[in-house]
Image 1 (cartoon, each protein chain N blue to C red):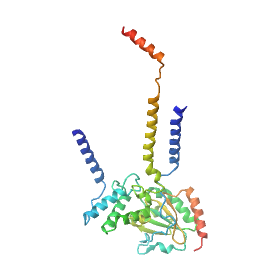
Image 2 (image 1 turned 90 degrees about the horizontal axis):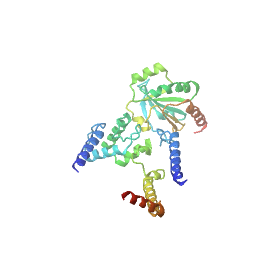
Image 3 (image 1 turned 30 degrees about the horizontal axis):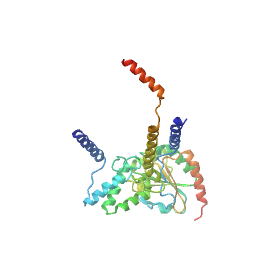
Image 4 (image 1 turned 180 degrees about the vertical axis):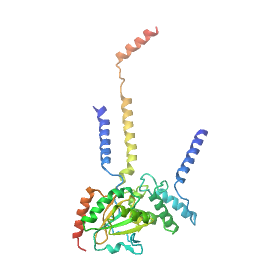
Amino acid sequence: MKRLAIIVFNLSLLAAVGSAASVESVQFETAQQRSLYSNLLTELRCLVCANQSLADSNADLAKDLRSKVQNMVARGQSRQEIIDYMVKRYGEYILYRPLFSRATLFLWISPFLLVVFSCVFAVILIMKKSRQTHPYSTKQLQKAKQLLEDESN
Amino acid sequence: MNRFGLPLLVFLILIGFLGIGLTLNPRELPSPLLGKPSPAFSAPRLLAPQQNFHNAQMNGEVWLLNVWASWCVACRTEHALLMHIAQHTTVRLVGLNYKDDAADAVDWLQRFGNPYSIIAVDRNGDIGIDYGVYGVPETYLLDKTGHIRFKQVGPLTTGTLQSLLQMIEKLHEETL
């Protein structure tokens, strides 16, 4: 238990290093703006390095977009306004969490479908296995028993 | 038969999806700006810094906006095609010098030739963000009303050039 705690603690340190490495330190007037800013950075995708959010990326474009977000937050624009601004220019792809729409429906429900299918598959398999009769005939089993007894005598 | 049939079926489906995946270009994103009016901008000109270029001054013309920079390696491969467009077609080519040093940009043009009729400067990339630029070079095709009709991310190629010229031809015939 103690060891697990140490591992978890170390991992959390790693995570802190990873996210702090690339983001410039910025100043805001209120704590609210600060948290909106850092929240938006994890919600928006860096388009050059598709599997990183703006908070994770060191790319030039990510830096530019970060400073754009910073300016918009400092100007007092709302979360939705900033997200709309980005989507209007870069498309829905810039959202790190895809929207739930008809185009992304399969993407969202496929993990659940997979779980359901595997459960059904497992249940069928188990039922089949438990219903299965012994692979050896009674005659063969008797013979085996006989041999074992002979051996022990 | 069933013992192998099911895994084989799953395998084939998987191969099918992976095969489709190979034919797609994950870097190609549909621009939400297609069919929309191009974002307005006004920026100083690279070769005449005291003058400003405003994109509205191109209204009534079919034109290309090419985002480039001297630090962009792919821009160099594209350059020959841009020269071809400048010399052999009537479409006006406007350059947007993106996040570049002015001296480097002028030097680049002197060395390789200048295919642009006008070059606007986007020093800190703000216009780029407005246009959703994420991979230089990018090329936008604008119609007579200033709507974006086509966008190419990455360098133009001889293959895309052909269809681009056809599109330009068609847009020329559109009346205001």
